[in-house]
Image (cartoon, rainbow, N blue to C red):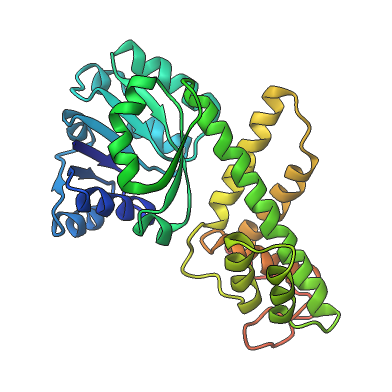
Length: 308
């Protein structure tokens, strides 16, 4: 297929490479030019601006949040002139935005598909993403070859794009809950004399095997938060989406409120750009455990405030 791709962060670059490897022609655009140059050197083509990708057969986007999607892609004039028949938004956005986007696209004859993904940057680079897709059935059929290139499995969740966005919001809420649980348990273990690595071995070797506990657990045990595969501030954004969605549906989510505050504490202490596993450091700080990687005690002092 002739594909336009917008959003070349860690995830987007890996996804474009998989599309190129599968033989698709890919035209790319990004706010910062370096990822564009990098992918052009690997066989992609550069768009002359965000409107340029809409001249392709299909558009795929992987932007950070609702605001980025609104500002870059939800443009009446651009959609009115679009040659593309379908837009696949693979980012984590609110169900409310998915509904608005579907209505706007439909007015201009462009199908809107929500297809958020589960998987970190290395998973995208290997073409093993789990894709949660919803939208018009014929549009889903049309872009199925793209999903096959980028993912290991696609869950088709119906014809309402907001349902796929809801599924992703729910999945990320469960993911952040698991990471926070490991972070708190690790702090409790260390404060009681149990080595983090030993606790991780027990957890992952018994009741909690799998990539979430093994991957994030290892990062927490090793206090290794960079490079970030899933940034803590994006986790904060996603839990906020869960709370907003819950409020609209009148569904109480008390644990989500606790998670939001834990994530906000990490962001306030300058850890927003670190991996979600940095929740481990937030738990350590609450327990007055040593903050520095070299084990130097901090006597419970907070991290320096990046705002001062």
